[in-house]
Length: 221
Ligand code: MG
Image (cartoon, rainbow, N blue to C red):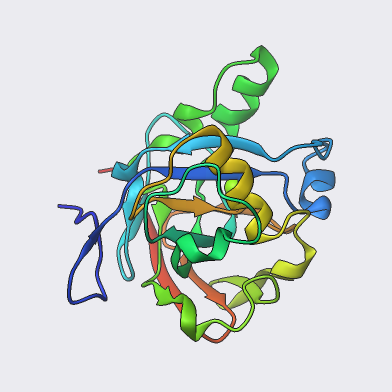
């Protein structure tokens, strides 16, 4: 059973909605042959997709090609609507490292037809997250190394300073659309180097030297 809480607090915080950004790193947009949008591109992932350290990503029967996308997660600490950049970080509880697992074959088909990405992004286990690090432990969220190794081999390595938007701008933009609540999680998009994962893989993601995530990949039984 998946537990929808951030596990490392005395008082557990229930995970709310997952607001995900796409094409926030120029090089990743380029590797997907996509244009960088003038505003952040937003989609939602269900909280039922969340798994934690040492859990397994399950390859669903409907997909033949899963991709990893390592991303910084921003956890919302309190209700937030129409935040300005100046006050945006007041609403942050902390940060984590996450994987936005994507059924790339299903997403490619959806893109072709102009369909939503909810299926490609929304399967159970498609949102592994690390423990949350509280914001006072993070000097500057806009300057954190972010990386992902698959079976010990570096696949993605970048820094959050290469995002097209700061965390403050992201919170300002998202909260201008929808109210953010305590426990909501914003996934800020992936740097370049995305690629396929298969049954038996071991994924290790890092954000700065503060957040660590290790998960496994296996087929649906
Ligand atoms: Mg993503």
